[in-house]
Length: 394
Figure 1 (cartoon, rainbow, N blue to C red):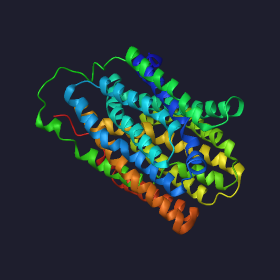
Figure 2 (cartoon, one colour):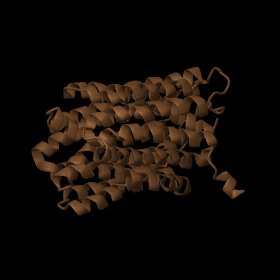
Figure 3 (tube, rainbow, N blue to C red):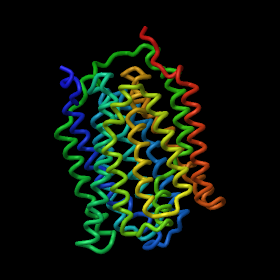
Figure 4 (cartoon, helix red, strand yellow):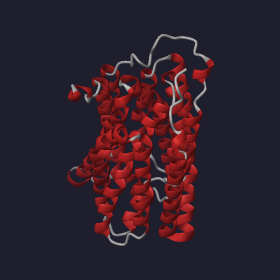
């Protein structure tokens, strides 16, 4: 009986493969962008920071509206399909970019697609499984996402070494897994019967998001100010002697480590609790940033990236499971929308500030400030721990 209880819903597994294919397409492009922007398009590192900051924040413009809309219409899937389809179409257009501003526009549209799909998708997943298995379900989704982020760079590296000789063709070929993503989602993922209950007029108490949710969100936003774009980690690796051709392999290795630890990390949140798991992950983040601050040798970079991957494994599933626990089912789309919108908006100043600290204080100073902010967030989370509990049923 115990093994049966641990099984994931088949639709959750399909959504995992959807995430896998989507990230294959995304990560065929992402690790090549810093070189493409600086060498081919002549942009500076400050342009890279701006592009990635805007890209991370763009999803926030659509997330809140998409989550609330999915609650209102009681359907998650149409918005999920629309978000993945938009990304699949615009993402390969990087191949035709002649200026870094065009890449900015394409990345913006790509992340708008992410914003449209993310909140309804997470609400869909939450509705497909009972509460005691949500950590595992979200951990599986993130693990498949990270597995795609492993395969995508490996495909890009293979293509560049053995078949083609410039990035633009790789960007075009990313269209193939993107289209497969949309096809699989349309034909194999149903609406969640839990999430599409009969339309009723909700009591006022269920329309109000609980105080515990807002406290958790405030702490997550504080941590986001420490969590700048990982493009800076690739720049740090390059500065410390990692050859250019190894950057996709390093990125794939990093995402493989995330994928390997994703499901155990999500399951840990079910076993020891959401807050302790998130706190452990933030501690790993702070320690990793201290490591990046003092990084001086290329071989150590690989081990540090593997250690940094534990942060994602411990937090990505646990954070979403915590938010799902804190709000009633019929308001989860709206709650995830606020989560993605708030953290997405905070991502822009995070990356811009990190770039400024890098310029003024050097990479060591920037990473140490990021580590200090992570420690501050961790302390805030632990102080508020007793308040991060679901409201009693009425």
